[in-house]
Image 1 (cartoon, rainbow, N blue to C red):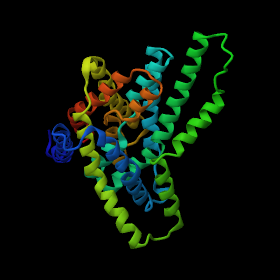
Image 2 (cartoon, one colour):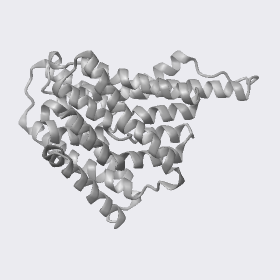
Image 3 (spheres, rainbow, N blue to C red):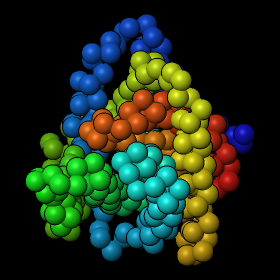
Image 4 (cartoon, rainbow, N blue to C red):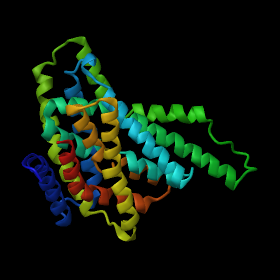
Length: 316
């Protein structure tokens, strides 16, 4: 491991380890995890996203790296459905193979490695990441549910939701979300040319600074309280697809589209991030592959300590 990779990853590993120890020692009890998660997700995350994007002009944004990222997502997502079949389980596994933990781990990692410039590139992806992936997954899952309902009860009087209605509901849920909203609000504020008063900017800065350490500690606490069980083998295969295959696809497509330098590095690292917790929420909502998804999130996060090293060495 070269010195830059070590220096970049060491704080991440240590903060996650602190959270793991705190979880094991019951300093942070399992019942408090949800409250800590809400604090980070609903207060600290919007503060960081809004403050960063409030200084970015739209003309500074480059969406070519994001295009390379989502082309890789489409290949991996579609390939999983092709292999597994069109059903709820396949849709959840496809989401797990492509949905990165861009907020809890990604922001902290990219911020430590590349600073504000790297975060702007990452937030360009984050602004549409949940919208595209969660909307696509919702549509696929709802269509799979409707298909399974027709197959299970072809004479049922209750008609499945219309596909257009499903799409509109999915888009609405993805937009009214604590991640896209502050990004869009910050961008709109930046276009006005106004300067944020110090009395508002300073509290936002303090909240944004608290995000990284607390988010990584929460990852460790969650790992300490999540059993892997008998699903570790399929979870390992799913984690390998997310942590290694996904970034390799993004890397190849960036080269193909002429995306290089910092934008390519950020996109490849974003793809190499472990599976995001939203995948588990989807498995719970649709009551499919819940234990496997939980195990996959844990294995993917632990595995990321090694696979991120490989990816960081690859991109340089």
